Image 1 (cartoon, rainbow, N blue to C red):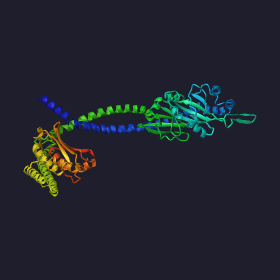
Image 2: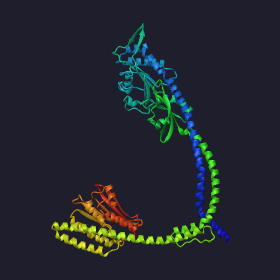
Image 3: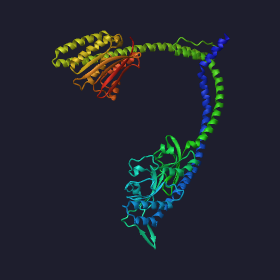
Image 4: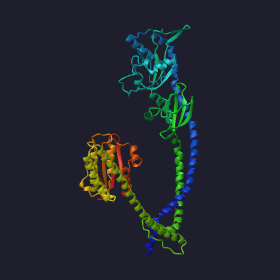
Length: 609
């Protein structure tokens, strides 16, 4: 017996472990919250200090990279100036016949040797040419220019505007720039950046300056670099500053080159369009795809472009966060153990006093209002137990009274809605009969009066709110007969309700307002051709009735107004309210419509056959 008593006691303790959990949560919050606040403050202070230090170093790296880039490219300016005054170039063009292909070939070979003599042996240049509208002079096995295409390009335009100065053209698509069709876009020169200068070949002799006559076309010096050329210049910094990324951009924000091929494939355009770099250099922070980045930039004195170094802030803070997390986890473990022990002891003391009322509350929650707490008058909680028992008795009485009141109220509301619906239908039907009499159709009016009298007999004798579907559907067929006589050729009715559903108990006249709405509103713009379909199907434990038409349809805004009783059409909203009151909120009416295409009204009720 003692063992069974102990087992029951431990089962009760396990059953009400929530009290212990609550105490544990309180202790954990009181202990952990200051720990996390302190850890957060330490993290923020350490992170800000590290970021400030990194920004300073980052700016220096960007400046150093920019200086290296200038060093690798500044000889182009000197080379172009010297070439402009080279007498050999003057001699070749002054004697050149643009129509002599042999002479053009020889001149190209000579110019190629001259150009190579100016370039250092370790240069990063992809190709160098002198370009005219009639020929490209220089290396033959490199990129080409269709006749006259270079003079029409943006590169030539910028060189002309520079009035003899060297201009740098950021990376461009070769085929697009020079209108080259049917070219393989995977060629090594498919994307280039170039230095272009319009030359005025000449030389100085005996204090005199000799230049080409105006009738001879001045050539353009074009020095081309591939993306790989510039990427190679940046790779050294990329390896030293991992995980930093480097890219080169113009002052307008156009990307010239990205050091990392993966970044280049991922961001074909500038990933930081709002960078807005200063005149020379600086450091800013920007966000990309939800992650914060540090951007340091420095302006090239040769090209005027900006070298931008990018590093995610997380790369600097991850190590701090890892160390801080380790410390917090260790402290958290120690605090959890202490909090668990404290909560266990305190909850054990409290549970001894509240097991009895908790059991009673649980029984009351399950609907057993006869449960009472048994106690001794000497118990210090005796007053509490006494009040709890008394409260349970009062609760039992109130619940019983409330339940009866709700049943009476529901029945009253359902009957009131039925009474509201019947006069509404009667009013409309009498109007229709009046119209037939005015149209001099007494026979049809007489038939309608007979149908109407039998329908009224049905509604007056049957005062219950649930009826057999067979009886209610017979009433609906008489209603449709009345409406067909009134609206000749306006609509056809298609009905698919098997006899297996005739015993289904349904709310009286639940389909009539839906049918009336179709005829009066759905076919209001029709003279003929209306189709009204009424069908039924089972779905699990529910029965779905469908009232479908090919009428004018209803807008979603109008549907909302109808269902919320904000219109004069009360039939649909009343029927929906009746269904929900009888069966519950999961049942009722739903309307699906498309303006100009028709409407489907679905009535869901439980299968009570």
